Length: 338
Ligand code: HEC
Ligand code: HEC
Image 1 (tube, rainbow, N blue to C red):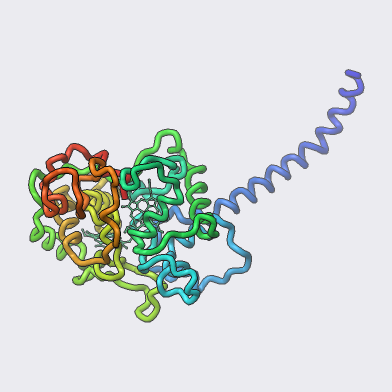
Image 2: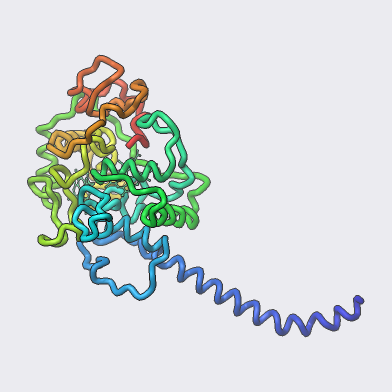
């Protein structure tokens, strides 16, 4: 028995080893080919670059992950309010998910999607219950995108979740997530100063977002191409129920990410500038969200900077919108509640 195997073994190694190596090589090639679409998303997207689904030649059907990547980056081209297939008009504005979740949801402290599927289901005060990842996505669909929920069984929903899963696997941070949500902020011990906010806006934001806050479309004639610079207010912006419509949340996003190109470990605005400019933006008109007064069925879980009533405390709506935020230490409540 022993002899037989000794005799047989070297012969087998000679044929099996090269075949095995070849097999491993092919597997590795396929693996990296599979990673390619979302690997390329790691480099920052250049706003306004000509890369657009409309000019891409599609030869093979997209994988779910590839479709998810496109939906997040070119949201308006697939599910925007002006797409030709009216059944696909889920979003109510021409923003892209990545306008707030920067670098295809991979930039730290811009509410990144890295490992996000592992964070759900989770409790959210706004619903006063456990929220699935699909419900969380639809939270942004109905508020940030001012639209309708995507059906949970739709290819679009499955594609976004598949992209989220792919953005988690290859990342070292799975065990110790850092960079989730937004940077924290030391709130000035005063109400936001709208005049100062206006001055900051004119100095540091207007060149891209425009004096009317209406941003810059990629194409003047086809808004489904989305924005080079997204609007900060007005009819095509996020609605009044969105997380970005809370002053503390917006200030924390702005601190880590704006002006465009800001690195989270090197903010360009002081905390006071971020706070005041967030309030200035917050003071401008934007679409309403009917029924928003039913958010947070347990009012004690309503974040301090939620700009719409009812409230559990006696502070005025004005104070909830613009501060001063007396419970300012309670930032944990202001996180993850969009
Ligand atoms: C150099 C151009 C530029 C400047 C200056 C700039 N932004 Fe932006 N801003 C962008 C771009 C581009 C995006 C979308 C990011 C993306 O899609 O990758 C964005 C996104 C945003 C968003 C989230 C998306 C939305 O539509 O609400 C907010 C809020 C925002 N900027 C606020 C500001 C504020 C406040 C300032 C000034 C302190 C500022 N930005 C300065 C280019 C700029
Ligand atoms: C106008 C800005 C904006 C746009 C556009 C936007 N979101 Fe969000 N999103 C937010 C904010 C703000 C949060 C809350 C982050 C926090 O609380 O830390 C959030 C949170 C999320 C979360 C939960 C993240 C976490 O770590 O728990 C998911 C998932 C998400 N958004 C998906 C999407 C998808 C998908 C789209 C496009 C269909 C989208 N968002 C468009 C602003 C936006």
